[in-house]
Figure 1 (tube, rainbow, N blue to C red):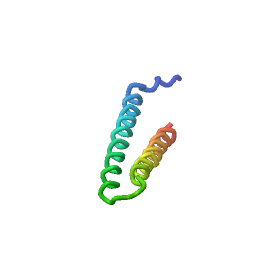
Figure 2 (cartoon, rainbow, N blue to C red):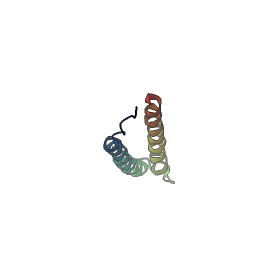
Figure 3 (cartoon, helix red, strand yellow):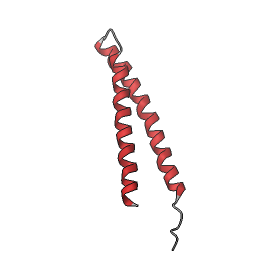
Figure 4 (cartoon, rainbow, N blue to C red):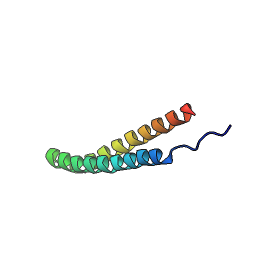
Length: 74
């Protein structure tokens, strides 16, 4: 017996939401990094680099967890 094809529109919306979340969080991290670097008067813009890097690491971890859960359910 054949299985029905998966609902790709739900999957597409989920990944589109993940992409939008990534863009918004990166923008906020850069903005916060600029403001915090100005506030603490760092000579090198360390927080402009560190905060977006932390966001990327967190989002990659979230994506790995989400996709591994989908593979476990199959």
